[in-house]
Length: 571
Image (cartoon, rainbow, N blue to C red; front, side):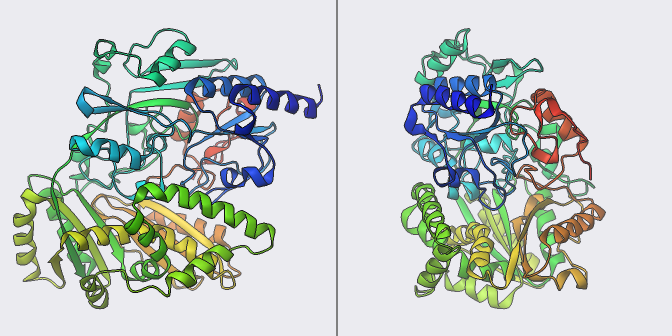
């Protein structure tokens, strides 16, 4: 059978499964799905958008039968291209399955646990739990740009909330393709839903089960049970958390698209009143001392602690302003639609040869608007290079404030206790910084080659956590943006490379420096198509997907069926 005919037959079957309007073909219609948020793109035979779990199963059946590679994608908010194709050398057609229409959140035990379907977002989960006085694993950061719950689980991402650790569960419903090419559905949700795929998926979609059907999970965890003890070990010579840690690889958790996950079962957490302290210093050893005390000297861990360097503060204030204002004025629920609209407009502009026009227009517009950050933050920006945003339980606020007062009586730096508005805006500014490098690149294409974006996990005992680059490497950069989750020593480091420099060579030079420091990377985004998977991670991927049907090429492994030619690069 000719390739063209087999592709036509596969498209016909996909359209029968989900309806013609939900099978997108052609570069124009598929652009926003096949291009990564920051990195990666490639051609696809089709983007398919199933509307039910059973439709998703039938799409997978058709794609497997048609010999296609399958890439599942949720919100496409990753930074390493891990949910988009990368190039065109897959040796078979690529079917990209968008799961955004598969929204669904089901409450268990009064909301103490939830079952989330593939299209459930962190933002929607947060809204669902709020009336119950409970919160999901993560309520900040990625939720601001519409990231999915399942995406977090599959990438072991998150961890900004110190008591909760990375996203993790051992309770999931997923499909995998065995070594013989057979598609199988595995129900490890701990919920009795029947036997065959059609019954299981239809009952789950409808929430057609009773408390008697919900098992005790046989000792399997629905959140990370060990992280709080690990993060307190401040003298350990290894990172507290990183994406490739084998201790957090369990079926769906850490699977990075090598399984087709239909649902996960997760713990939720009691919401508590909180206070925010804004801390500034020009000495890194002062912040190190604060970190060690917060992790070891108090009965309860802080809720979160976010770091911002002055340069990141400045770039974020100017180039993350529209994201800040969008979320501040309209809330996180509107953000995914706004990003999708911008992606469509970007596509129109690119076809007219006007790449970056949308970003430049938005940047010019927000530049006319009044200052958006609280005055006391601006005053600390003038005085201090290093900023720490500390959120603690309200019941711990008095003791924390007293300790900080005593500490700064003998150390350089200062702090203030935020009002509710100041605290909210401080954390919002921190997360708006994450998009600022992308905006800077688009607004300054004439001087910027590209962004090198790293998220790294430093050793827990690393006191020299603030990076000092060799002069020759530093000269190749326009700006360095340092920010991150300070208490667990996970940092985001965005390097804006000068025009004419080689971003890949810069990145490899950064890797060598990080290896010498005992760091792990990436910390909370999967390896995507940027990083080579270490042997243990590559072995995990092969065990999950022995036919190499799902997300082939992840971690610079083989893109071919059956892992043909896999040498699984090591670093």
